[in-house]
Length: 458
Ligand code: PMP
Image (cartoon, rainbow, N blue to C red; front, side, top):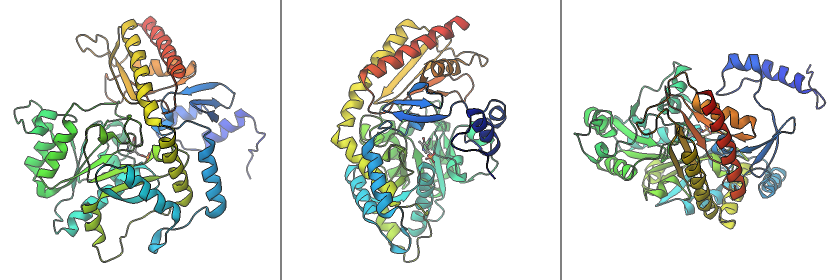
């Protein structure tokens, strides 16, 4: 017997939410006390409304995925048409469908280099998990089965399964579960000189190169990284870093996996994050923006060489998900990519990047604690520091990023704090790629107010 109906009150909904719905990445005890922070009900463009009718600008595209904003009828129509025609079919046992084939060809045409083969998943974690399995299996097939370890970066986020959660380098995500993939090793991010070969770099001991030097390349299957780290706090690598790591991998017979789950499909102003540095990975994982969040879809792209090795296997490839190649998700994916091209979305991202940079400059000029602003396309953020000139962080007790995010939320702007590490106060800003100048100005104005309010608390 259920009690809820379409006519139930908000209070009844909240009570049922507390009782029956376990929320991901949420503090359970707080949730039980306070209930949901917001109950979303509708969206249009960059704006969403809650169940009480209050409107918000979605300044982070939900989870960096609703890249084309809400209410895009073309995407809804594509889903509706396919749901009516053939909602679902399997891709196991050699079964196929036109939408999955067309989408795989389309993705291959957009991807750099010869990343021509596509394995479909239902999201980012499954994509990265698949990439790890494929990388390890690739070396098995080459007769080098000792190559099992995966190197990932601290501050990186790669998913929530046992292996991808282990690869995630954000401590908060490890506290929760004791289960670990013991063949994952973390390196410090963005040590460009060490990765280029400078063993005198003070941080060489924490570099990918050091792990390879000490552990042995014959133990390492792959290196995975986000071209720009997202959840860890929007960290842009120094110039030359991605190229140096790719070279290091090539020199040592190690596969380079790019986690493009956030960066992919235009977020950084190029089709893929790696395109900013002209790097072609051996394996590339995508999700999120591939359907703008309108359907659950991810994919793993393989170079010709990796693909040829995997398909040389003369037995069943014992890996796959019920929703691999889901025709409705693929129909939405195709329409999303078509929309991006037809509407020159990348041009808009680059234009709006300049507006956002202008807004950030204004904030730096008017607020003494705003530091280290960065924006590549519409993947952006800034830090809050006690003293930006001497690089002094706020004391742990001062939840600066949290204050900005909460105050902005109350005033109708959804942002995201990256404050997992002690004394780190980063605010992430990543609006839908279809955002316009007026909306960016509105966002900056709300952040401006939040900063003023924060300064009054000091
Ligand atoms: N990789 C990156 C870079 C991500 O940001 C995320 C999700 N935030 C994932 C992987 C995991 O994707 P999903 O939540 O779809 O499994």
